Length: 236
Figure 1 (spheres, rainbow, N blue to C red):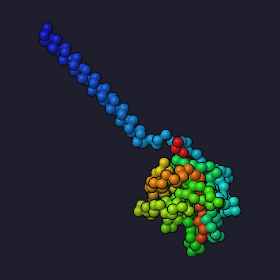
Figure 2 (figure 1 turned 90 degrees about the vertical axis):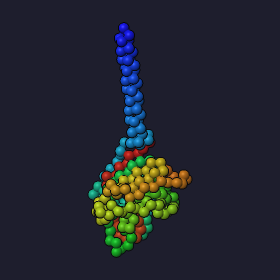
Figure 3 (figure 1 turned 180 degrees about the vertical axis):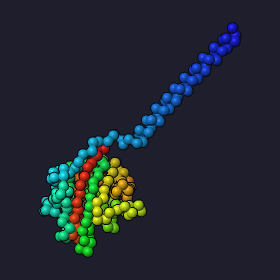
Figure 4 (figure 1 turned 120 degrees about the horizontal axis):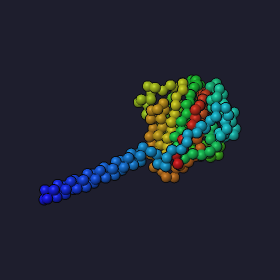
């Protein structure tokens, strides 16, 4: 009887140990899964990706300066700024009517023009404000000598010079390239052709965290900007 009692007690104790270990593993696995979700999923989730350009009209867009409307049109299903033949006398911008805060913006673009005619440059404004028919805010820069720069238009100037170590091998200077702008809270990231060119943390809490998105055609040379496949995914 003593032997049977001993064996029974041992089996019961071993069973409790297995249950305890199993429960601990289950809890640990759950915690790990939760941590993984927190690390990979943007806070608040991801919204629906929507097109900002319908391929036919400039519905949802307007020129910052009403007098500059003739610089912007839709040609061959592309947002088009300038004609590549006439020099642009001053910076001109085509902006969204809506404002945006946290988002991922994507587009394909092509900047062309005769560099002998003057400065050939463009950019994508975001979290920008319209002030007296002009614009103030962040700009993802486009153009020779400024590819991938993060610039603060009409405010603080250059924030981060574009990193071209990798991009210079795959950049199509006069051809089609892609731009991705990711901004969440104070964190800003710029990508051209999938290569990160700028990573910036805003330190000034007084800088607006919402604003319009706009395409810029810089003054100087006879430039032409073409844009297509314009989308945005907002983050709550």
